[in-house]
Figure 1 (cartoon, rainbow, N blue to C red):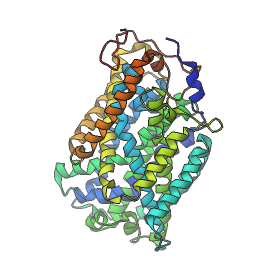
Figure 2: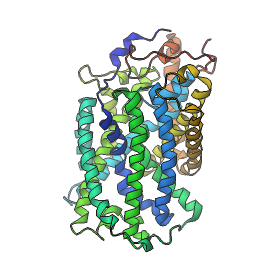
Figure 3: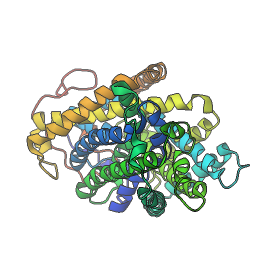
Figure 4: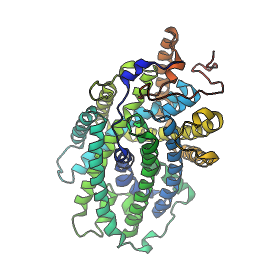
Length: 475
């Protein structure tokens, strides 16, 4: 089937360079990972958080390799959604794998914005974190509305300042570490370490975030793998270095586990200046950059569903000047602002987000292995050939996700199941509408979300595929 040329009118602009893509992975993740989780995760495992970070990082790197390889074949918006739907020729599979991520993205924007407000209280104690967070969301809403180029420039600036602020903390601390502070190293055994791995893994969400903006990254065959794998490597190094410092300078790890600002608590033991102010600046930069990246990523999923006609097509409309999916962005803005006033249930929704990330990561890892075995024509489109070595990161990523899901599902299903049910109703309604209007699903799946039709030539699979209703696509 020939791709629908009219979809080019709704395509995105490739305005994000390599630094912007890397900044999306690193700076877009550090807000929750570095400034909160590194301290609180130790409550179940003690200083062995350092080792858990390394082990989680190995799984994260495996997943990053899977994403990187698939991204060179499908340099589209939507990452997991685009990979799953185009490999299996099945919109429902991709929708189920990513529906709950949308809720997670919107909740993450709210939580991180509230974190920005909390760090602002370091300098202005009387400020209301909710209104400060809303102000941040509003400013970044405007920046994102102005297009990928403005997003990239602003994120690059925040990224550089954030890295400098972190180095100001960890470099002096490296020289004041005392080895005795790492004992006892394990305090909760295997179960404690596994419990800590789930929140720590949320610190690697930048992999998926970079994939969401795949249709806006220049030279995606080079820059997407560079951002995903290279950015993840930077995150692992920063997390391990920072964890080694804060647990090496504080004699009692429980002090960090109970602290609202663990980096500040640790820095007070070795910085000759106001540690709280320095951490406050870093926290403001980290949470702002995270909100910025998650906002840019969160608008891509409804955009992709709309592109594939299983969601309101309004969400795939783009501003003619800035190529921004404005309806999708406005919806995320409105819901995120509303969620800042619903503080009671946000922790649970973030738990759902982590659960959903693991589903998406596992689905992507499985898809990479399936494509290598069953879709040779697509495999030949990749920018690099990993050979059968792809099964190493594939199995490691899938196995790691299954292991972490065995912990993450607890307390998540009460929200996840109803939300998924709503999603299936939405999908069913638009699928039925497409059936009634005789929508050509093959023609849709021969395009990539966000990519002009003249930029992508779909590989022709030589095996039967399955349609949305479970029947062979050839039917």
